[in-house]
Amino acid sequence: MSSYYRSKYAGDIPFLTDTNYNVWKNAIIIHLQAIRAYDHIIGLATSPTSSASISAAGEPSMIGSSQELQETRDSFYQQEAKAKGVILGSTSPAF
Image 1 (spheres, rainbow, N blue to C red):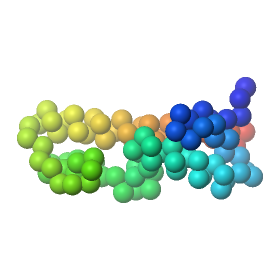
Image 2 (image 1 turned 120 degrees about the vertical axis):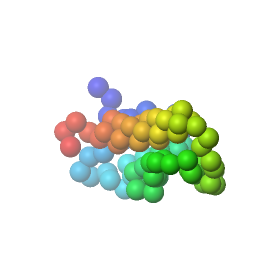
Image 3 (image 1 turned 90 degrees about the vertical axis):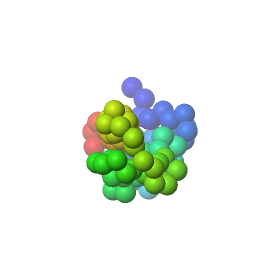
Image 4 (image 1 turned 90 degrees about the horizontal axis):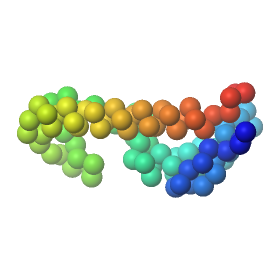
């Protein structure tokens, strides 16, 4: 079994253990930023709840229909799940 999380953005990231937090953290931040999920981890991402939303570029945008709102929410929760999966998947099973 490999002791690395394979990232196409940050290369092989060593699994988080009790001795390598700083190395792991720096590499995971790069990966999370590349997949646009870092804000979910640090608590800056907010779930779209109304017709006013923030675009991927950080600018206000209007969501015209309930279907668009649902798609935006789905995308938000997918990004959040990816972020959580990266954290879990890059942690040593023994940790």
